[in-house]
Length: 296
Ligand code: SF4
Ligand code: FES
Image (tube, rainbow, N blue to C red):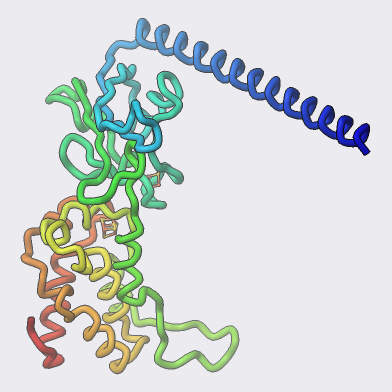
């Protein structure tokens, strides 16, 4: 029995030291990659015609030395066609692999990289560095922060849960009045009706509009422009029928719904998909009046 225990202990110790060795080797490999990337950055900087400073907000609540918010500045060699997301990736890959931000599609489709760039909400992948420069397009410094009015999880990553809850509150799914008879029958819509909701259907759930909205900043329960736009998309879809439209209007005319909007247009200005959000909110207000719903 005691021989068995000793053998087991010995096996566990060996396994532990193998793990430890592997961890140290991986750490050394990572350090090697980092050194190589930093050397490459030095060469890039020497060879670049233009270098600009990328000033990035940093915060990590899990590491005591990093839990105090600060800005880090990374020199980035400018290349033609470079976006803010490209610049962030350059900084992460060449200077600090712990720099954290969301991105995926890199073509303004997934909505994951809405950021606060030089004081305005932008999609990182859609914003050209050259457009943030002076009259000759030479960028001096670009400041990147997480979306305002949202809790920061780490560096440029914000908690989107509240935004998604507000979207959910308007029941963002198509609810047909009548299903087509045949299995292969299409759910047809008139050309005019499609045209009417076309812009509203472009939303990519990036949260830029909500972050820019003063009303949402002061009223946490306000549905916000993106959710109201989503409600517009379905309320205006003729295929849902009048009863469903009435139900949808009842959701958006609630105390923290459309009537909170003060037509400041900030959401419309920052929307990367050019959705006329304020216009849609106003139209829903008119629909609510027409339907004799109550004011708050
Ligand atoms: S409405 Fe525009 S800004 Fe708002 S979440 Fe949708 S795409 Fe983003
Ligand atoms: S990375 Fe998908 S929208 Fe920018």
